[in-house]
Length: 207
Ligand code: TYD
Image 1 (tube, rainbow, N blue to C red):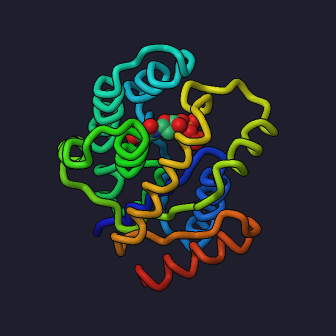
Image 2: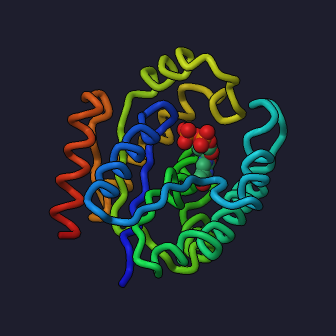
């Protein structure tokens, strides 16, 4: 038996982590085994790469190709060490970001060609594709507002401009329009309404 691989995407502050937690609780209550994980990271090695990727400021020179390769390296480790074994054991895997993030952050926003990112995504994922991708869409202005309310240390990505996040959001919407595996949800709704939409989608796709 194979579990379902469900990824969550959206710009910072869109509410992914809340929705992942609510979905995991619901699945567990229905006796479905589930693990939650994230990218970059998810493994000991991957979390070290995550620190390298997030450190510094927006002015730190980080070659876009080096950045992409590090995300892909973290992904390859994550797929082989954690995601595939869990799916093969019949568990559902809920992942906070996966290769669509590379397509929109390194592709649409940092302007690396789509075909290069697609090639590396496929290579790093070893051909694995999510069964369902939830895109929580919010306005970048709302995102920046939510980030400043959080008041935590702002990382290298969170210091990017409004234009950067507009490019990311545009890339996501384009992907969602072209791919049946996406469910696009308006992130302004209440967290209960968003969660209900996700649960309805899970039932209609997988049960
Ligand atoms: P994180 O703190 O996990 O952001 P969030 O809480 O918004 O998910 O930081 C991950 C950052 O890395 C986030 O800004 C998006 C970026 N990212 C990429 O640029 N490319 C990728 O392939 C991935 C997985 C993340």
